[in-house]
Each structure stands twice: as structure tokens, then as C-alpha cells.
Length: 109
Image (tube, rainbow, N blue to C red; front, side, top):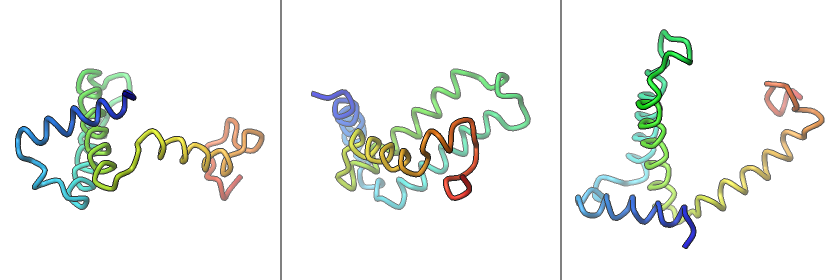
């Protein structure tokens, strides 16, 4: 079994044991991703990056990823596949010779 499927299954089992699927429609999962990403950002607010609490950063990253995986599951997306597809798209948008060392967006390269 691939590791991403195994993790997704554990997340779904956790959710289902608590009867939370009823709350996990795509809109609310997308909102939850944004809320958790906001909580991640808050850990850095008014601080230098090295001042953020690593344990809390780790927890918030996990929350964001859990909701992303649940949303992907709702749409029947294979997380590994969609990430690899996006990397291929980004390779085209950001060729190494034009993008290396640059923070410019693809349409500015």
C-alpha cells in the first residue's frame, strides 16, 4: 500500500469514528484549510522566522495537510498524482534557465 493512501485511510478512519464526515463538504474543507493556514501564519506574526515555536509549526502544517487530504479524497484525487502533475506543469512554467535564483512569477520571467 502506498504511504499516502495509508495516511489518508488513517485520517478517514479518525474522521469516521467521530461521525465528522457530515461536516466535511468541499466548501467547509476549503475553509478549514484557510483557517489552519492562518493559524500557521499567526505563529510567525511579529517574529523572525527562527522565533516561531517549531512544535506548533509542525502541528499547524499537519492540520493544513490533513484538510488538504480530506478535500482531495472528496473529489477522488490521488494526492501523489496531483502533486506530480503540478510539478510537471511548474517545470514548463519555470524552466531552470529562466527561473533559477529568481522569485519572479512565470509571466515575468
